[in-house]
Image (tube, rainbow, N blue to C red; front, side, top):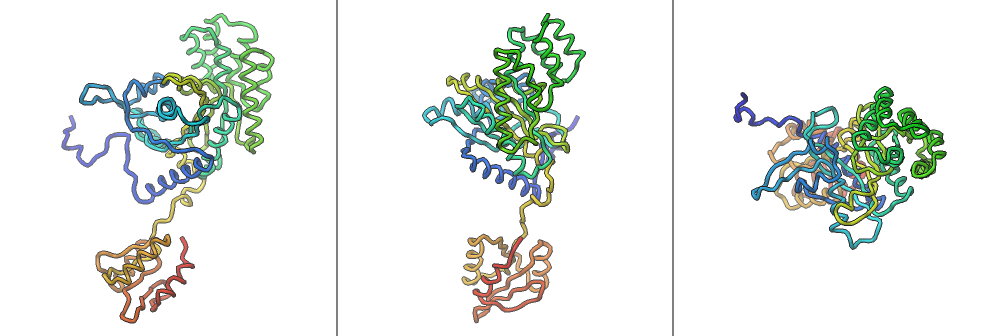
Length: 420
């Protein structure tokens, strides 16, 4: 049995430290997404990391409920770490933003926690970024969120990706009236693309005719608008769901995403709360979705305010795995200039001015001098050193070309040539 003392200095299974370039890369990804979402007129929400368990389980399927980290407060209430953001945003929209004009456009970036076996690109604590468009039940709203998901992957330099677009409303219409157990067996067989299991599941329900024909073929209906032809002819809610999906697809084509989006009517997995379109962002370099989302028009009503909504969540760690040029995405961190430690007012003022101008300036606090200071600068990837001013108001600037005296004006002129 492992003693508690032996765990000191070790991390629990499924979490990790990020430092130096990896920490920089992650923060850069978050900044890129925050800027992108803001430019699409989405505003940030920051929910708490944990809430009452009975709140966070709303809309969550059995697997997600089982994966939640739970604990008790001093009053005996069961609390849980969030395993997903959507339920929290739904609660905020219903209880805190009721006086805001519709639609609401919200985005979030933060850690989520799931007690499941760690895998490449996802630990038990991982970073999720996403958006929710609330208060609009239109194909245009669906298309905007899917287009923004594609833009997010492009902004993260994930160039070789595809958006797989499905329609849960079509599946729901085809299975309307079936008992829950029958519906779940059919859904699992379609999700697994298993024709034998699907035939058995359909045999057990007694479904026949065109309805059975369409359900049987759902796993193979992958492609363009042609996969919807039988659904159009079926009529009723099935045809209506197909028509909505077709409208979304055409809008995405108009956005220039025709080559990125593929219809898949066998796409019936996901959160239990999805009621309309569903979609996933896939990359051939990663075996799991980089992002997933869909329409959920019934979730927010469980907090007392019926509102239509559509959104997606993106796993930042997985997206970073699929980057086309990971090294190019890492922001520069080496100082532009290392300054010899000095207590002269002129030196300290110059350092502050350079930093305010946007340059990364490090002051050496170990009192290195001469060759030692230059060697330290090179070890940090810094191409220049500035030494203390002399009584005549000159500094000594050293770079690969050697050391020379410079005035403050000459130094500022040189900064124009500094780059990353």
